[in-house]
Amino acid sequence: MKKDQIFELFRRLAEANPAPETELAYGNVYQLLVAVVLSAQATDVGVNKATRALFEQVMTPQQMIDLGEDGLKQHIKSIGLFNSKAKNVIALSEILVRDFGGEVPADRDILTTLPGVGRKTANVVMNCAFGAETFAVDTHIFRVGNRTGLAKGKTPLAVEKGLEKKVPQPFRQGAHHWLILHGRYVCKARTPECWRCPVVDLCGFKKKVLEPKGRK
Image (cartoon, rainbow, N blue to C red; front, top):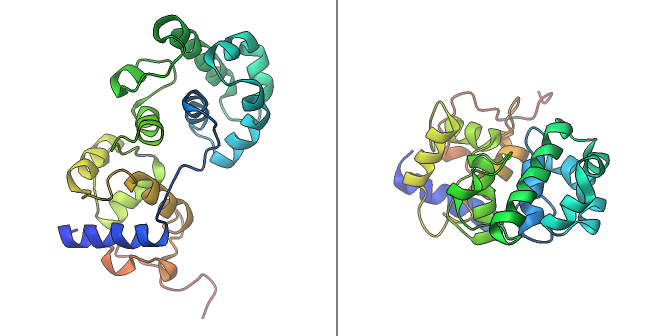
């Protein structure tokens, strides 16, 4: 995809949604970190449902420690891998209290040392909480990057590096939100809804679905 096409792709996505943001619900940076950790292999809708009551009770790492691993499990047991996630959330909360005064550090490298926090999670926190121009490559962005030709790569890191090189200003800070939402609601995994895609003419995907399923 050429530079002018990439600019136009993001211009259109931005025009349709000028202020994109994560669909995870949170009240502060710590809650965002917890929500993103919990969202691995789970939907944002499912995480929001599980954290609604949790986040009314827990707003700080110390409050999470006080709740305890078993107490946390009762809130998040509807989420996949909840046992290991509860263990990680308690462990990272203890580290935040012990080493960072209960604050979430605005440093991707430090974030990735926390239990349960990989590069994607760290990128989401850096972008949403601290305004960093990071690209959190989940399954949606990985698919959209490869399918459209925007940023091809065999691994999430390769796609991330491609986006870092190709996404122009003024779209860099919001880019990963636009791509996630586009992948989630339009450029779907099984059947992309190309007939209603605002960037279909810019996309390099050869097997475009130009009519809704079932239409003759």
